[in-house]
Image (cartoon, rainbow, N blue to C red):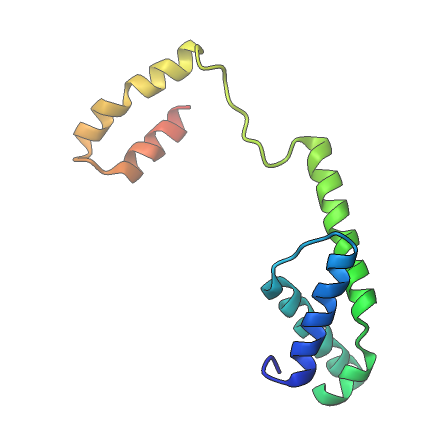
Length: 123
């Protein structure tokens, strides 16, 4: 499906519509979304994929993607998502855990994964 002219035009048109709205998405994300939409339409209607293209609407797809991104950003910013909780640098417990890193590296023979697991468990 991705090699067809209709698919390439749909991706280009949807990206252009997103640009008009001031929203940026990776072309691969838009391509995945369009492929999923066309496949779903063809399966639900019991028609061939090439016939499902007449139901494709680039502006509507761009609207859905833009709204989805806006709601994601809104929900993420409200709750502080994406930012790990960090204790203050002068936290004595953090200093104690980090002080054990060199010893842990020596004990594990330089196995950084084991050291990270040890720090995570003790933190």
